[in-house]
Length: 121
Ligand SMILES: [Zn+2]
Image 1 (cartoon, rainbow, N blue to C red):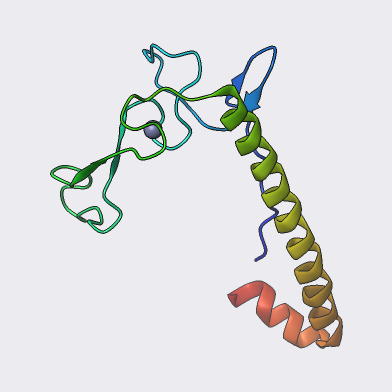
Image 2 (image 1 turned 90 degrees about the horizontal axis):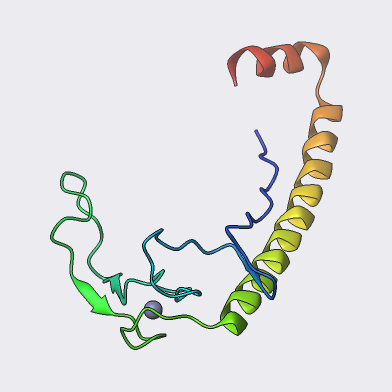
């Protein structure tokens, strides 16, 4: 079944900016880096999490965006918020197109076929 895209969540709000990035509650910066969330490092994308140990023992890389400091900028927050809004708009458009296709497929089916789909799919 098609899922409606979720709206971006306002995770950080200030008088000047808004972002859907999160930051740890003990973060010492007003704006955490949008890439590493204020930690200064990220997990190596070439070293995927283990199904048993998860993130334990994974390689860590110094965050390139904040050069390891963990501090972010207000402009990054606003830019990230804008990007997530645009991404959401694209997803909604795709969802609308898919729904039109889905409804046209359902319209072609007989009552018996619809009954089968409702019961087993
Ligand atoms: Zn960073």
